[in-house]
Length: 147
Image 1 (cartoon, rainbow, N blue to C red):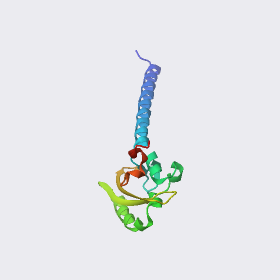
Image 2: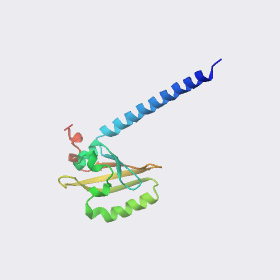
Image 3: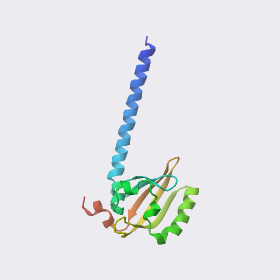
Image 4: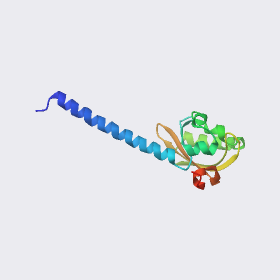
C-alpha cells in the first residue's frame, strides 16, 4: 500500500519533470526567436515592445535596452504615423485576422529610412506579435552573408 507521503513524493517528482519540460520548451522557443534572421517583436496591449530579437535590434541599430518598453511608434517615420495610428487603432480594437502594413522605420543612430512590410497577430491576453520584413535585405546582415 502506498502511503500518503509516497504519493505526494511521486506527485512532486512528476510535477518537477513537467516544469523541467516546460522550461526546456521555453528555452527552445527563445533560441528560435533570438536567432531568427527576420526582425520579431512582441508588443503589449499598449503597443510597447516587451521582447525584441537580435535582428530587430540590428535593423534599427539599437540595443535591447534602447527598444524594450518603448513603443514601435518611436521608430516609425513621422510622416507615416497618422495613417498607421488609425489602421493600428482599428486593428487593436477588433484584433481578428492579421494586421498587415507597409511601414518606414528610422534607424536609431543614423535615422536611415528602412522600408518594411509588417505582419502582426493578436495573442489573446498577451498583446501582439509582429514580424518585420525589410524590403532591402541590407537591413538584415544575416541575409547578406555577414553573420
